[in-house]
Length: 232
Length: 365
Image (cartoon, rainbow over all chains, first blue to last red; front, side, top):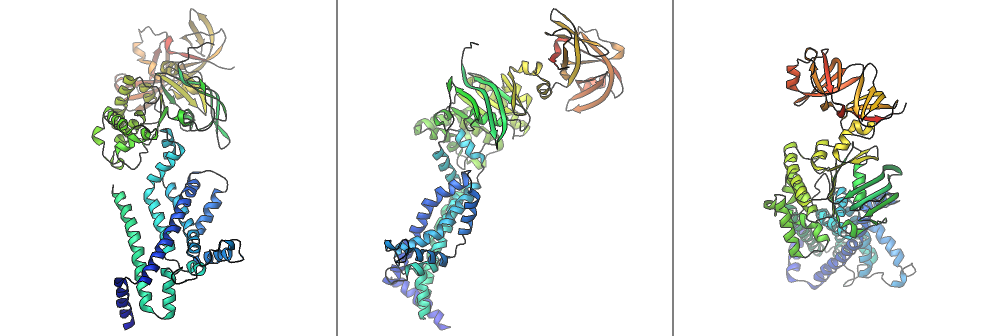
């Protein structure tokens, strides 16, 4: 069992020495998952709002699709994105296969339904009469929506945390569409899989510690903002 | 018909639907400068629909609405909505400070920061809640929250203030205090407002006009005295507290005095009617005076009926007395009177009422 202890020690050394490879992998992970989450937020917030407040045909169908999307297996997403980006695929011309952009696209597809679905829930928790009240005070539609977002800011933060959490930790899609190319598409999760299969447990543990720490730090800071606001 | 038009909002031949079903029909309704209109009616009658339509938040399927004489077309009329302010039964404050809540509508209108602060502070003190300025909305009592909600609407200085049962969710003492303060504000500012209530006392206390909505139809609009003493039909009469309705037939009309045969006796009313016209004689319970049989009245009241007490119903400090005399008559007396007259079920008594207390509604054969 010494190898576990050794692994932890080596991990600490790697972290403290600021290993360039490890640093690169970490930064790429952060970058890819942040962009994917941000994209999901930018597109998901308006769509979630429309689904929460709008009255239109097929609304329930889309809601159930999105809820299913929350449980989308990353490998399935990886497969579909691969098919599309494959040289002969419909989007093959873009040349995104085995690039970080492909990972962003796949992670976007994973986090998007999470964010939309939780946005819908967040807004539906508000008193529906609040919309009438805001319009009755002279809000434009946009001002009303903005006020509702502010009112639902705590659960919307939770949606953001959940969206980020769903992609920073996924491995299947990143592996399939990114290819785990060193210095190009290797992110924390794919690196862990690789080192594990190579038997380099020390590096795998070091990367895992970073991944856990990262997830913890980000969710901690979001939770902190959320709770600070809740106390007010 | 020529009319001096000082109406702010006006509706004509309007119909509103929800889910394909007509929920409100209004032939004519107008809100004039300085009027405080109480919209009364039972739950689900369409009162709130009327208010939301006035607030431009519901589009009628047909009919016209005019704002200061100009036709309003359907669609989102932001500029118009900004001349109106709406207060709902629940304060629906946002999760922020009292100041931010009152500033909300002003900020929607992009009013300069300094002006917003001035106006918010002014209205907070007018409503007696200046000390709550920096309190979070979720730390307020029900009465305080409703004051914030009123300040939020009043700070917009709207042409018309619309209120949907604004005091309905408050406990009695809080409600009484707020009503009193609000009434003082209304007269001080000569506010124009339309408020929905199902409380007749509140309607009389705050309204100088009353509109009655029953079953999705605006039945009558006028000064409270007209509505309460001269309802247009039996439904309105029943809703505004007319408890005695006696069918009869006009047998004599002389100088505004109408004599009506109601079976065994004849009753007198003041008003206009045609000979032989079938009518309903309507009486409010508080307009009857009861007498013991052994001390028959010497009052100037023209109508006297004799009958037997069939029921006594206590209602706070008052008692409803049902008297049977070929038809049923309901009187409202104090508990003291009941004791003094030794009223019990089965007791023979007499009741008098003035001819002017009787309101006649024509009836079909």
